[in-house]
Length: 450
View 1 (cartoon, helix red, strand yellow):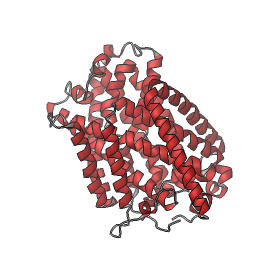
View 2 (cartoon, helix red, strand yellow):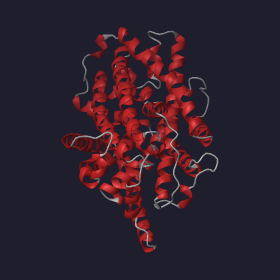
View 3 (spheres, helix red, strand yellow):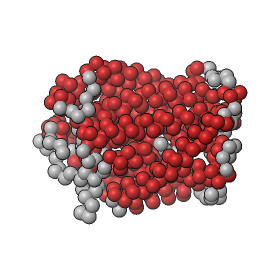
View 4 (cartoon, one colour):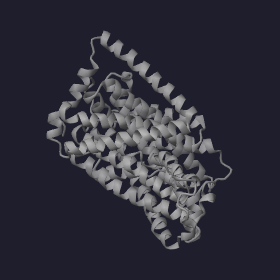
């Protein structure tokens, strides 16, 4: 295994702004309106249901991040406590999620940019956003975090103004009946709604660069979950209380139109700008997180060695950043629908959420010293409760997501099988060279952490 290590440059505040910008993406400016067209005024219930596995994700991520603060910690954890094959599939599905997930952000960025540039080509705008973010990240993680802090501050403040202010202008007659399309529609909406909560677990991928990670990773997750849950609940209550749910489903920029009902005209422009910022900050974190994951797997001999090289200027994985950007551009070129993209992404998230939950159950026996010495430690009974909730909801979400999106799900499954074939062939090649993946990962898990 390469001995190249990334530097711990990210403070607690930097980690919080990165995670906030990742979780609160452009989807919250778009999806609640579309999903209200499915679930009616009860869309807030769909988001509450989607928040349950998000809480489980945060607890699992806090546990993993506090004991294995390395790049691609989820991969290392799954590989050591379960099997390297499952660890690899976790990262492979994450890469697939990148290809279909970040285009949601890029297209969301383009849709809101149409407010200012109605004649601009949607794909060109989406591609331009990715290329600008690549340039920022090539300048280094410090530059990226500074940009993130400014953008996140602006859009979080604007969301709170809309969400809190809108409570005083809700038309309660628009909220009845709560479930006009039945309770099944609530569950149908909860699956893509979880996409808006899906960014928490990504924090573990950059644990190697977070200062005092054993303490700061759990703190970052707790702070971010509180802010996100508050904003999401308020927004999904306010939107259908301002605009009839039948209309919300067909609006491209529902929050901009809803804000014009009770706020000054310029605020609709601020909401639009905020959506642009949210899309950009989420895509920015995707670049950071996935480049570190590719870097880590290359360091562990799974991916080609050139992906494990770093810049001599800032000690950051530049080749991996460029590859991740190329994969996002590929995803944009597929031109899928946003709800399909979201559902396909959630299918992958649910799969490796199950893997993580099973790994969590095995943690106390598979890595006993790590567990006993952890700064943040879930009790063994709590572990079983969290894992059971996570597995149960993940299985339900998987079923609903697959049944509602059979064609994308079939393509997704084929791509997962392709990854499995790659792993088997790569593992055989390494074994013939006298290299043991299990030994590499065991050494990674048992190194001394700062």
